[in-house]
Image (cartoon, rainbow, N blue to C red):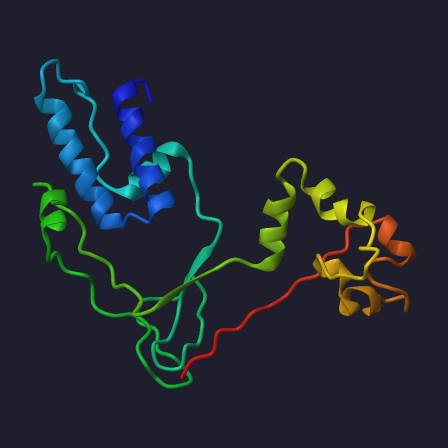
Amino acid sequence: HPNWCVLCVYYLVAFLHTKHRTTFRACALILICLAFLLSSIAGNLVGDVKMPRTLTTIWSKLGIKDEFAVHPVCSGCHRIFSPDTGPKSFCPNCEEEVFGPPIEMTDLVDLLLEENVEKPPPKPQPNLVAPIQLLSEGLRGFFKRPGMVSAVNAWKDTKDDPNGDFRRIQDGEAWKTIKGPDGTSFFSGPGSEKEIRLGVSFGFDWYV
């Protein structure tokens, strides 16, 4: 951004959200207040530049994109639907509506964000959503980072503890004995020197 003052605001709000979990509405309130203050003080630091008013705009201006897709979820049986599911959809399992009524403006931030321009009516929102990233997509992004290939193979250059102590996951019995397609050790077999072999663990948080 050509205006250094506005750019500082971009980074400040992005940092507060990612580091300290500042909510979207709190970020919007910060942006509105800073825009008012910066335009009111002597010299009008922002000039004629229109300050962003939402965190979504900040992401767009900084070129930051989510690494996951937001999927509608049935609030009754928790069935997951495709992100492009229509707003009039019903769950085939329990016949619950997937989307609820449009969110109406109810608080101060909404009123401050409202401008005297004609806007399209708000869209129906899912009653429940889940951010999901496919494992294949996560691994693709992981290995795009410099040094990751060397990092995941670094354990091969570390010897087992001479006293037999378990100091890392590679010291466990499962890591050493799990078989690959050729019947040899998946992680240490002959084919492991020619390719990256990863172990993926899944955790489940059950509730009633």
